Image (cartoon, rainbow, N blue to C red; front, side):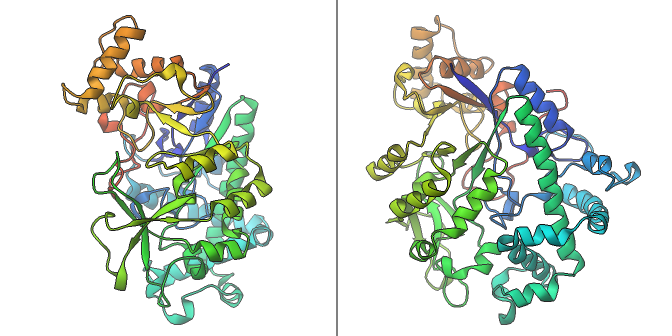
Amino acid sequence: MKQSGILLHISSLQTDYGIGDIGPAAYRFADYLSAQGHTYWQILPLNYPGYGDSPYNPISAFAFNEYLISPELLVESGLLFPHELIALPPGSTVDYPEVYLAKDAMHTLAAERFVQNERIGDYIEANAAFMKPYLCFVWLSHRYGNSAWYTWDNEHRSYSAALYDACKHEPEVQRAAALQQIFCQQMRRLKDYLESRGIRLFGDMPLYLSYDSAEVWANPQLFDLDAAGRRLSLAGVPPDAFAAGGQLWGNPIYNWDRMKDDGFQLFMRRIGHTLQFMDLLRLDHFIGYVNFWKVPCPQGEIPETAESGSWVKALPEAFFARLTEEYGTERFVAEDLGILNSDVCHVRDGLGFPGMIILQFCFEESVPDVQNFPADRLIYTGTHDNNTTRGWWDDLPLDSESRKNMSEYCRQHLGGIIPDGDNIAGIMLQIAQQSACQRMIFPMQDILGLGSAARMNIPGTALGNWQWRCRQGS
């Protein structure tokens, strides 16, 4: 029997606080999923976002996004009083500066009360491997006016236990630790509720980390950096369906040989930390675990595009042997979009990781034979990186191959219905249902039939993304 789910990041839920969160709106969405017969709720990474508010450019591989904490649940737990809530006007987008300002004020009060009543030190010690470096990073970032770590004084260019001992009682350190513990408590409660409703949470883990992140600062030896902390190469992808000039992400490249020396501990801890709340985990940019696009930046000069890069082999055999030894294979999905080669397909299929099919791409060259798609693939109308289905259709030239192929598919399999902007999202849902794929995921924007204004992300652009929110009542 086929299973279905909806892709909707938590930030896109409608609340009274400017951004979606893991409070009552998430519970209502779980009820909606259950009532509609869905099995999966797919979300984007829960990491604390970095530059551009992107969850795929996290400032920590472990710290969760504190701005997804529910103010209403803070009141329920006695950490805020109702008169201390700071509501924001409803809207169709997230105004991040406004959200940060309001939630920071509420979080400061809640964290102070939490620290007074909880043994925050026990939580820090239980998660010391990542919490202590993260807390030091937060403290030093404040101390240096949020400047990048590679501009700090030499004595603060890397993590040490002595550094943590020096800052562990600082208010911003206690606050940051409290918010992480509060997030975990709220998230555990939501996860329990999802399980009671028969909903499996489907998460996502970025391959790369932000250059200005706690893990790069604390573990520079694991990245392709020079002695001064400058990037010697950058992550990205060559020209593809998303960007004609390729995508230059700017993340530092991993030093895979050194990662192997310690059993890929950074990755193993990241994955375990994420899986505590996820039933299924998408390995974003799966291709990069097999071979990665490496863009050189000699003398720290950043090129304008990713076109000067080249493919370099990673260590997939050693990495995935370690991964499957630790976590098995059943909970992973390969985000295998982009330039696949035989090595990538061999690793994916050898592990038994299901890949992804994006219907928008399937109509570019021919009428797809969806009845013969591999049954284990997850089929999507689009993802957070695509335009919405209606936006995709509206942007297609009238004489495009995609329009012709869609019309021909409708003639052959859908009774000759004429596709247009009003019905194209519904048509795509039907095509997914007709496919041989046993799991279907639909972006919420396509369920609602929304146009380009509801797009979540435009790959290759750093600003103005991750802002879309469901309207009240939608």
